[in-house]
Image 1: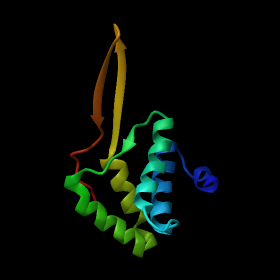
Image 2 (image 1 turned 90 degrees about the horizontal axis):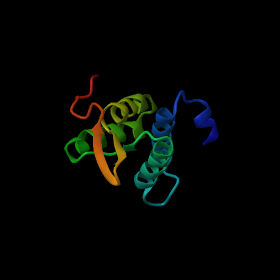
Image 3 (image 1 turned 135 degrees about the horizontal axis):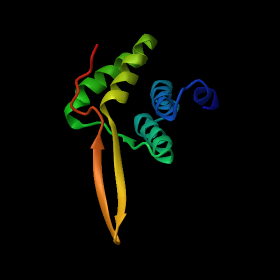
Image 4 (image 1 turned 30 degrees about the vertical axis):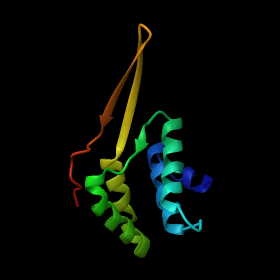
Length: 115
């Protein structure tokens, strides 16, 4: 895992690389995608970057890209681009006079994948 981190430019890339690695290697008997998502989100949350979240409306395309990644190593970049451009969510907490305001920001959520 340290080798993956050392080859990444930033924590977002590291989180997505970890996700791609764990899902493809199938290192657990069951729950590899869930575990990979937890691992990626831990990295993102620790660095104040938000979370990866797969929206229901894009699940079919996501599943196709993930399947392609399993079969063909050259397809990893398509999966990474898709995750990077569609599924980063950030929650900002502001403390104003003992009230907490939660604001949800979605980066490029409605943007279709460009290929």
